[in-house]
Each structure stands twice: as structure tokens, then as C-alpha cells.
Image (cartoon, rainbow, N blue to C red; front, top):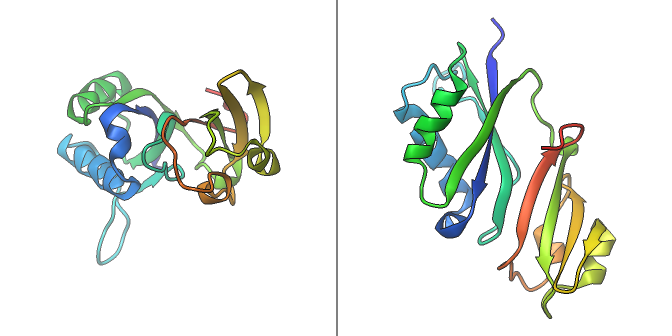
Length: 175
């Protein structure tokens, strides 16, 4: 039987942007279990929820279009799911939309648009090396990066990420 794979898009801002990626993954898994959904688990001695998350979002970058995929053994009502999960998510995180998909996402098909405020700690030349600047205004730039083999540490040298926003999208599925 083919599993039903739901791709869930959410926004992570405000106080939620200070939750680490691993803690956020555990939080989502606990919320999904609490909702008593027909979740699909791996087979074997220690079954795990069949869920995949997008590339990690460093603290405190705002995630405008983050996503995860979770597998079910039967279809659920998407509108009801969005309503119920938003009641349990921490302040600053909201599920924006979901849809059923057949294909798993691969890291090679994920791109991100970073909105970077121009401060002394951001080097524009470093961004040009790894991505393409698509918009440049007086106080910020927008850079597109392919997430495969991407490292925040190579671009933002001193590790100060405050004020940066990331919007993920999958190739051929601009959201």
C-alpha cells in the first residue's frame, strides 16, 4: 500500500526562532502524536515516525516558508489538520498550507531566498561566491542559494544571523 505523504509549510518567527532545529523536530513529532492521526511508522524493533524535515534553520533566522513531510496510512482532512495543529504550535509558528504529494523532496531540489540586512558583519562578496543576488536595495539584499552543500558558516563569517529571513522553495514548485 502506497503511503499518503503530506507536505506541510509553516512560518517560524518571533520567539519560535530561538527554538533549535532538533528541539523543533521533537516538538512537531510530539504534536503529531498528540493529534491522534493515522501516522505511518518505520518497521523494526524501534519504530520511528516517518517524517522528513527541510534543512536546519539557524537560530535566530526567521523562516518564511519552512516545511516538513509526514506519512499517513490514510488520508486526513487538511483544513481540519491545519486548524488543530496551529492550536498546539508554540507562539510564532503557524502552519500556512499543506498538500498531498507523491514525491519525496531531495536536498538537490531545494532553494532558499535569504533576505539579508546590510550591516558590517555581512560580506556581500561572500554571498556572491555561493549564490546569486536577485534584489539589492539600500538596506538589504536578497540572495538565492541552492541548499545542497550549503553552509551558513561559510557565508555569515562571524555567526551573527539576527535580522535574516529565509524562504525555502522546491524547484518547479515556487510557493
